Length: 257
Image (tube, rainbow, N blue to C red):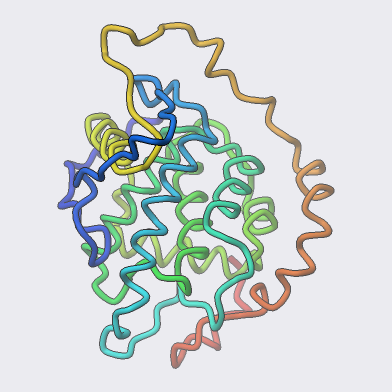
């Protein structure tokens, strides 16, 4: 991760639901998968599962709350996209080459955005646009190698211009401070695994130092991403055509990203 201005651990508000660190009871009848002590070695798909579980809990709570002050944010869609949070996050992780630190940073952004932008909450209407924007910002801001916005827009199922506007609004709301402290990611990792059923973290003394198990597949080229997503892009057309309904924003849609 690039070193930029670090941030302290924020108040874990995560929208309007309970704090991230709250423990959830594990099911005694289900097998438990033990994850590496260090989040850097956590398999990407397992990281996606525990994050999706937490986000689904937020959505279940926040969808029952009335819209704050009746204000729509740029992250609101008219209708919920026809893809689950788990499948969408898996899609982003695979085609946008998201590593465990980047995925955890996206969770950190939930806290930051909810804290600094009271009109925003994670719901079925905001989660997908939030995730593709957070993935884009995390990859471009924290990684030494990343794709261009055309690739992220194709993977996320939105227009390039709209992604550019989402990215700028996102950075503005976060005051351009997007780098969490390393200790912050450790705390988020522990909290996520603690509340996800069927998972636990191994003891520190048994942590493996082998990096072979943490090897990622070779990143796909933009051409391969375009080919693999061509068919699924069609069913996303309605969402891609969906733009923010806030008054006064329509005139900005045609501006370059």
